[in-house]
Length: 271
Image 1 (cartoon, helix red, strand yellow):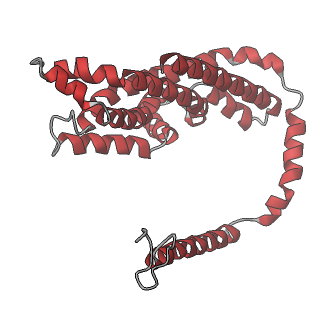
Image 2 (spheres, rainbow, N blue to C red):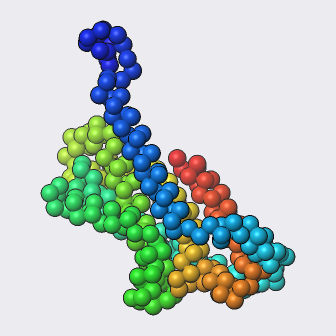
Image 3 (cartoon, one colour):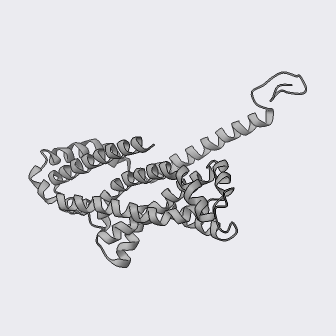
């Protein structure tokens, strides 16, 4: 009898009756959530502002044009700080993520009952908090500046790199591990000769990808006092210098495009 057939009339159907009811129940629940969410949004939205948004947007664009290109000279040092923040934060986060990933992977964890849950908790906690929130906390703790931005980027990167890396470790070919173990190799030698060569290309790719993401996130950390080009953006916004804001947006866009191009080229060359 085909899978999903009805035993009573012996006719084939795509889903069992219970499966069909579950699908329809899921769609009904989704519709209810959508209606409730729309009601909440409608109650808390001032539609007069929404109707006036096109006129306000056009007015803002008119103030932003033409861009004040002579302001570019004030952006090179903040842009350099932003790139340093992203790069150093990525390196620091990756350095902390590697041992956590090996502790979190089932096939390499020294302790499945204690160390693995601790490592998984740190990875999940890192991924659960946005880098902007980390920066807010760190600016309050250690004061404003590039150091707070670097640590914020690092703490956010731990979860990203750690999760992808430990999943890659768990998916390695175990036959290569057994072959190296058969030579009498110890645990560290197994990691060095059997595991690292298998995950190294993916590890380099995910690290570069994270660096690309961190450059985008670093551009806004200055809004909360973590230095970089975001600090210049905050200052221009506070003084309503829209012609400067348009220049900063152009620099950020160009930086992200170049970083994306570099990231794509390097990952393609390695992977």
